[in-house]
Amino acid sequence: MGREDVLAFSRAYYAASPTYRRAKTRARLMLPIMMLILLTLTTNHSGFKVSNTVIFLGMGILWFIFYPVLFNRNVEKYCEKTIDEGSHSKNFGPCELTLSESGLHDRSPSGESTFYWSAVDRVTLTDQYLFIFLNGPMGYPIPIADVGIEAARAALEYVNSHAGSHVSVIK
Image (tube, rainbow, N blue to C red):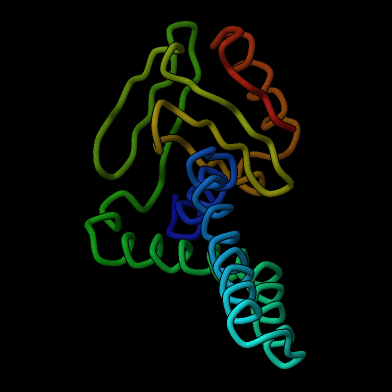
């Protein structure tokens, strides 16, 4: 497991997070609403002016269109800084994940962990990764290049069948 794998896991976690999506939507709408209020106030105070309309509506529209990219980039930078400043590098290196009847067991440079199937929240298979999300922002980013697509699909089905109906599977 490497730095890029952890960043890919963070991206996938935040992309599916309702809290993250609400925060992004709230931030995306805040400035356009403020621009409409300012436009209304200036129009009521000094009358209609094309320049005010272009400025306020233009800023609001540009913000609405481009802010999600900026928001995502800021979160990405935050994730990178968090990984770089902490002791995450102790976790980088060979990781062995075993799927068994009782749950997940992993060995990594930082030690061993065991999780019961009830700890699995969701499983996502993308073109590059099989993500196994545990409770909270924890889990396993498994690169498809390391295990192969057939093994990743088999693992997806295995996790889904053992973790139960509470797991959401996204392919």
